[in-house]
Image (cartoon, rainbow, N blue to C red; front, side, top):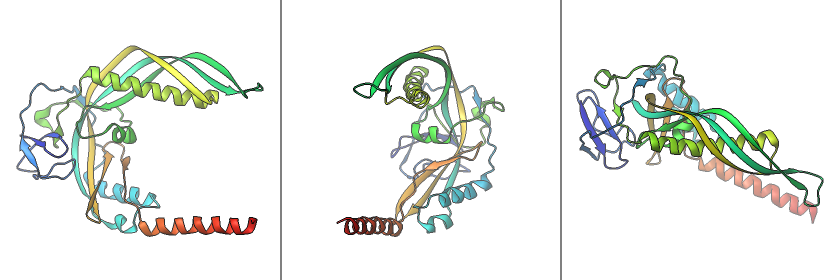
Amino acid sequence: MDVTECENCGGIVVYDADTHGVRCVFCGDVSLKAATLEETIAPSHAVPFEVPADDAQGLFRAWAKRSFWAPRVLRDQTASIERLWVPAWRVRAEVHATWTGLVDARTKSGRKPKSGVAVKEREVWVPASASLSHEELRAIAPFREDGAVAWDPAKADAPFEVGGASATTAVGHARRRFRESVRRDLIREHRLRDCRASVLLDDVRSLPMMLPIYVGCVRFEDQPWRFVINGQTGRVAGRTPLDRTKVAIAVALVLAAALAWLWWTR
């Protein structure tokens, strides 16, 4: 097994040089250098792949078709897709939130204060990867743990990235995520116009695991566009280029409607 570090994105991947190419599985760059494994996170379990590699292209095309603004040609392209294990922390905690906000009321200002305490068990996934972003992992989560198996790097059947984020770092990210989710839930539940919340975590359980993903890349007008696929559920996330013709038509229609409205109301 060989360990390489990408000089472009910083990803450190362990792979079999006899069966895998010399490009970075995350960004496709060829600027790779040999790396050595220092102290790293040791995942205890791995969530197995359930999506066959042969289905990844179909999932990409179906995802591209769902975006009206994506160029039609993108749907027919063959993407470069790599199967990969990435490290992540699953953080669970009992979240105690003290909150205050404003609600509509028959007062002079039209608002009145409201406050309370909310307690709820919550869970988030936090990447321990240097190359998989928080937004990407959030977009393709969750992952089920019911079929998780013991992780043995010597028996890995795909390249895997080396984890770098500590449990303390992961819990810090999770705390911010918990605060965001608490605010969203409170605003929706109590119809708050404004909401401030502070959270305390109790019974924190953080577990390092390997997650199955596919990393894909497609080129459009000489620019790479990356997407990721949950290797267990098939959920896809990423950014697609915009069809400039569709955007131009949409802008023209909006301008025409605005001009027609101005002419009608003058």
